[in-house]
Image 1 (tube, one colour):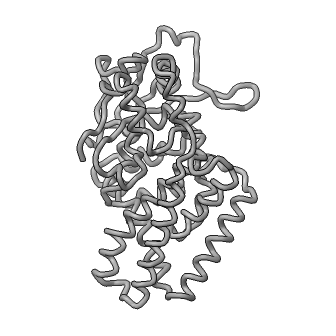
Image 2: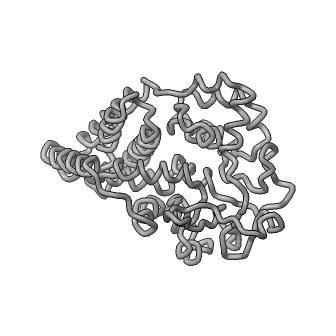
Image 3: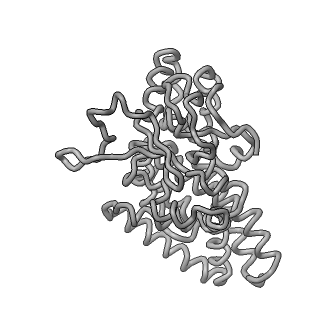
Length: 338
């Protein structure tokens, strides 16, 4: 990505009388440009984000897609299988030297792939798509969190749901880099640094943007995670915990499965008025899909336009959505190969 190319599409919010953020609407809105681009800055758009519009159009054209919504029972079994795999690997590496190829390659090939899978299991569960019960979804998310080593599932959910409700809104969507990040990392070396350590940016950025209330589920998440880490160290060694944390770091670093972080909402080419969503006439799509083989390991998160259009459709049915409503997706920009 050229150093001068901005990386995200955002919308500027203003506050209403109740303090809620909304997209800015000015008297000049009808004559204002649909997009604004400044070098070393974001792409600022002044149009409605397309997912709500496309969802309504799809339901009107294909009302049967609403039957695809609802929990996927398979999710809990995949979570339990991957959690078990990571615990087994942690046990098998209890006596392996931390600074060894055996330790590192296991963490990179198996551990990072498994923990990226668990990141996205938590993403899936945040939409209540493992069980019908909200409390059961919170519980399985905490279980999925165990091999990650650090408690985060309880905090992830409110931030991620805000990402859906306020996609691209500056100050609310914590998937967007901050202005400081965009300025400091606006170079080839800066972007390489970001890609290497992006898991840390995703972990720390939300707290600098806004804070979510601390609830009992956060306490439960922290308590269960610390208890699990303690038992793991006692049953294996510190190496077991090191393995899990290294797996989490590598899962969000220079790993093939981490590519979805960049593929989902980052803009690589300057926009043109000819590059438009064929349905909404939006100059720049804010979301991009990827249809390659890595979706097998990542709960089909690559079908990201489909996911944002219908967050209540689980991972196993997103391809069916694309098949039924293909005319709404076939012309959208996407990452077809990786």
